[in-house]
Amino acid sequence: PVDASNPAKVLLSHGNASVEIYLFGATVTSWKVGGVEKIFLSKKAHLDGSKAIRGGIPLVFPHFGTIPTSTLPQHGFARVSTWSRLDPPSETETATSVAFTLSPRAVPAALAAKWPHAFRLTYTVTLTTDTLTTTLKVENTADVAWEFTSLLHTYFATRGVAHVGVKGLEGASFVDKVAEGAPRAVESRTAVIVAGEVDRVYEGVDDKAEVTVTGTGHGDVVVHRTNLPDVVVWNPWTDKAKAMADFGDDEFDNMICVEAGSVAKFISLQPGETWTGGQTLKTA
Ligand code: TA6
Image 1: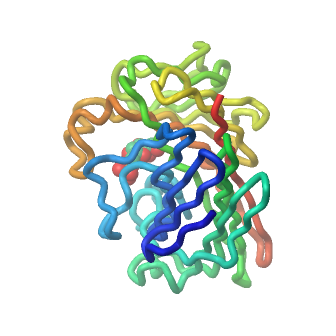
Image 2: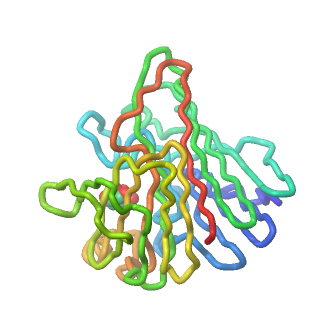
């Protein structure tokens, strides 16, 4: 079933699974399977549209981080714009699904002015008893080409981040954004662990490689990616946690971000062209 009685958010349920999505940012803020929450949402998250939601699955578009050619804030405007729900939701025996759309007129004017391109985004959230699929379609509705990067900034809930291992990245080349000079290296470990601040962009990880988040205390989750070749692993650790006003000082222990994206290279879209990328999270 789909519950849209609250104007700020949509609740889908399917069997013993549920997902909650805020129209602000089209941000997934909860995914529960059998009553177990898989997704981290900060106790200090702003849910009133005054700030990007700290936790859940914020959507990064039209660029990841900050870039020299844009004055947009970090991670772009999709996560701070109020999306519209597309009717009707779809409900079948096997899945419940809802879609959202964003075009420039719903982007805060000051931000839209900084990225003056015509586009349409469609974000589809599909729930089954053991999976959550989130797919972003980007359409160039302008008469000139433009380029973008995008990412699903998924925050997984953890009970003690020291126990977590992110598997499936062995052999991948990464940029270490924490180390001086952001050096590049190749991952040699079977599992990426967190024992301090981690902010790494693993580039060009084969789509067929499953990335598995283990040891969270909330059940393992396998991340299947489509057209999202890059994987970011982030944990702010103690000092950065303290520096974020919308994040509890101890909450670094309760989360790990494993983010599927296409961020290492810009994607160029010609007029009328579309690009689609997404992930399926599956309980293991
Ligand atoms: O994806 C990792 C990252 O880009 C980090 O560098 C860290 O800043 C994080 O995202 C959170 O960014 P935010 O703008 O939400 O504070």
